[in-house]
Image (cartoon, one colour):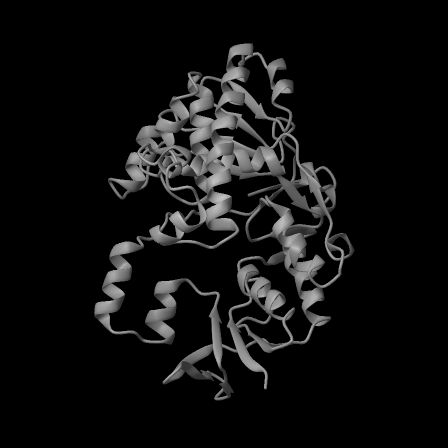
Length: 373
């Protein structure tokens, strides 16, 4: 008899889980989503001739998504088209300095703000970052290890401290290799992917620049929402039961865990296994309603990451100075992060990440107009 698996939440994680589980004939997979569309944070708004992509704007490591298609003998390009973006992003500084991050590091030498020594330092840094990635890929990406014992299981214990740069912060790891102050700020800002501060976060997160240079930075043609549409198309071809407009209200537990899921529509789903795409603490608070003592331990261990404030603007002019991705750096990066993460307040001198997707895809808005977000 098949085991019934219920996946709660059809964001990219939930969709990926359902697709992966559907490969195994012993599972009967149901995907439950409270919204009318699949994709979670990925969504789109069309207005006045503009197509605003409301979710994340950067795709890296597309090979992880490609696996979802190849495991079912499908080709990703038949479902979604992705194209590389170069420069990866353009960096603006208050003194007028502009630096592009290019896939080919040697081509960056043509920029007046960089010297041959700066490029050598960057390549040295990326060699260091590759070691961090190799460690993380072995332990986390491929084996999903989170406990210390699992780390020892999958990686040579004599090399863990060195290969993870365990006792350094991200900023300290950068400064071991980089002396150019602009490049320090640029590499530190890769922390934006996880919403933390490079002055507090562990050095192992310096794997982020390596990942971007190694696997490139990609744009999904038509906007990131089309990635979820591609996965949705694949899901419809697989033995996956999809229920939308279906919010989970409560669950019933038995001896072996959750046995029933109650929806706000009053419908009940019998289940043997539950996979949650919700964040851990909200899931335990709102769905399984765990005791406060258990929640307190999670609150202590998992502090919230920093969110952002996003504006989606359709403007009746173009900005030739912009690239697809742009970063306007604060005068003092350290003061910027200190305000947010230590003083817990907004800064008057923020670092701003700005996307102009029509640089790569003019079809997203009217001619001679620009999307700024």
